Amino acid sequence: MPRRIQRIPGEITRAVSDVVKNKRVTKAEYAQRLSICDTCPLLMKRSGLCRSCGCVMRVKAALPSMECPMGKWSTSES
Image (cartoon, rainbow, N blue to C red; front, side):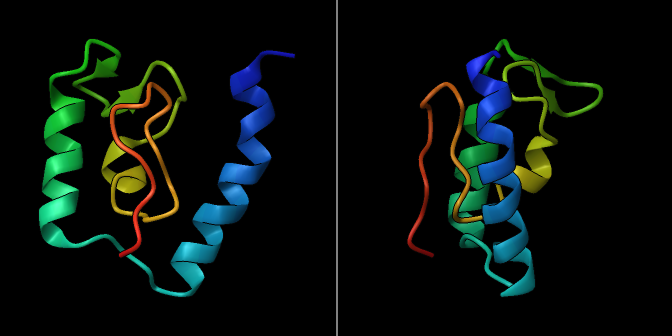
């Protein structure tokens, strides 16, 4: 099984936890994460989906427990 598929259950659990607890990164960190994604060749600009992980980056970038699958930004303490 591809490694990225193996990560999905854990990512979903952490993302749901962030949403339920209403946890978000700061506006500045969110903007920084999105600017990094905007320069990434793996971002499908029209849909906002990442070709590496399949996530909607406008959502994923807002959640502190999420990280870029390419290591361009990491989890946050926000």
